[in-house]
Image 1 (cartoon, helix red, strand yellow):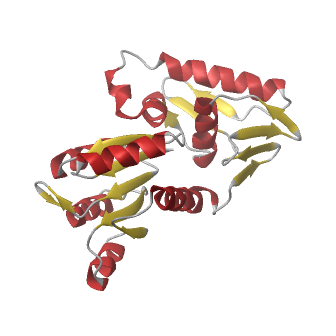
Image 2: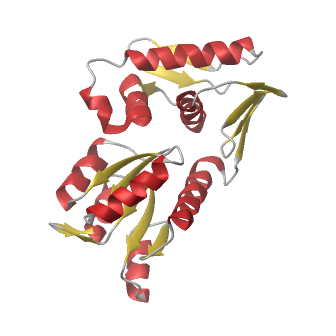
Length: 225
């Protein structure tokens, strides 16, 4: 799971990032309005946390830009503003949830997880695809009734592929999902091939059908057939 935290108070942003990271969630921070606009334009996220008060602009304009870009990222507003009008405005602009500061980080985590499950997997903690079963809370994968050992990156990759079944994913898109904006700093995306190769081998060795298809010169696709 990849999260963007749009928050100008660095202590709050780092606190959220540290807590979510301890729960195996990759986080990036945008501390200004312009940085946030740059990131949402260049990257896709599973969920975006948006503070309404930002240097150089406000969170509502971020929501408008996301709507204009036709993004499907989940959106949670995190704000000290608690008026009914503010909440209605946020929801009308495409926000999925609203959390008033101060809040417990454990509640934020649960809301993020629920939102991502709802958007990508119909609200389920256990994702099933034919003979494959993924427990997103226990971070485990089974083929039939047989549990296979997968790294966290491999599980993230598997969920990303299944969540985008029948859609061709470029190597750069996969690299970005697994590594965030750090992917831009890498000379190549060979690590994507390595993760794909290892995941395919583990699934096939456990008796799974071969759903991961290479699309020459582009990337990979999870074949639904």
